[in-house]
Image (cartoon, rainbow, N blue to C red; front, side):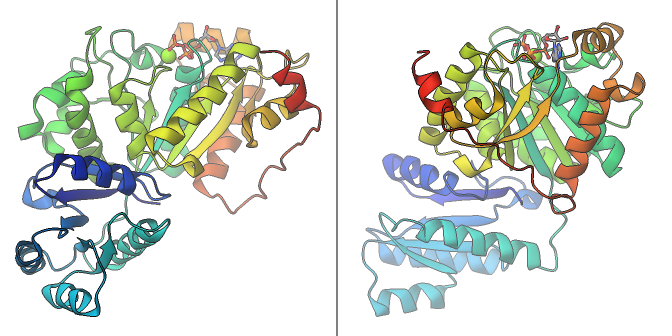
Length: 388
Ligand SMILES: Nc1ncnc2c1ncn2[C@@H]1O[C@H](COP(=O)(O)OP(=O)(O)OP(=O)(O)O)[C@@H](O)[C@H]1O
Ligand SMILES: [Mg+2]
């Protein structure tokens, strides 16, 4: 899958907000840029508001098409007369949408835009963005994000970066035993000169090949005012790396939300306990409300060893989706790796290290192995419902 960049051309702020929510809510991740940035950063799709001033919208469409033959242009109108559709197509629009769009119409148009972008001769292989999000603090999100990222770099042999999005107490560099002179904040504060060369200066390289954009040491940043810049950093990283891994912590901050919008895959990390499962249910609802498409959210159960406080099939029933992968509980091995700053795959032949290996192999080649069969329990939902 691929991250698309969308630009909404409209003077109507409420429309821009609603259109952004619609663009973001489908299966293909779309981040919204608010301005036309550098020439090499042109959007993949532009949504032109033609609801009121059709002539101005047609003129904008013609200009856009002349300047960028390969972008997808969506013309939005209040009604779909054959004449209006014809004029929009002649001006260079690829899609014609009535507003508000019918269920699925916009998402189908986005899927066609993604296919067009990928087929264009100038198309580069696109980055995958994988976001790890904890169902509660201490669930093991950093452990899973860091070890997954190391395995991704090792197994894919393609440029891979991990971004520590947590404000103040990010621990990604600590887990990997490296120090970084720079952090995510340097990227956020230098967007105007953030190109491939500058990014290389900001990241620190681990011996596994993984590169790290270290966490901020400010407790209040990245904050709400940084959201646009965080989205922009993800777009820029997607031009430099094949895989982007994000440790987004366990708080739905504005920057974590920006990461969810940019994600191809969101891994929600609960433990098999009541607080985790309860929070995971709420987070799944909230992520759905935010419009970051639920299809992209998968569940990774961490510290999963018998006796389970709550059995995996009950967790699946409560969350209404299968557990994609389970990482066993092995405090000794995990904390030894953490305290020595060496990722699990480099500390020896342990079961948990091989679980990361198989998890990432399956992620990199999703069709190579049969999907993990979902376990079902008829009791789970009722039992959990009675717990809270
Ligand atoms: N599979 C596991 N088995 C046993 N212990 C684990 C496992 N995964 C993580 N831990 C332990 O849990 C603790 C918290 O892990 P980690 O820092 O990765 O969690 P986190 O969700 O990122 O926490 P925070 O909310 O503080 O960011 C650490 O002591 C770690 O060693
Ligand atoms: Mg953490």
